[in-house]
Image (cartoon, rainbow, N blue to C red; front, side, top):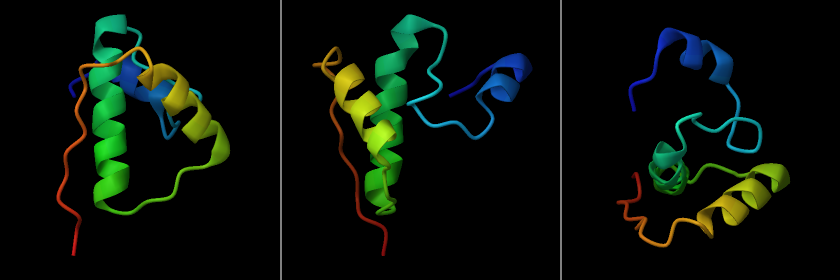
Length: 71
């Protein structure tokens, strides 16, 4: 997802518990992409990240998560 240099710097290495795209219509896509990458690569999710994703995903009923597990 393309973002401005300023947005990229403000995000840094933060997860969805501490940073979301400021453009609200992009948030559901961002959540879907985040979960897809975490699932594909079997990456861990900490408690605050999981809570934030779960809460925000409730507002994204049309986002489908599909992935092929990495080998």
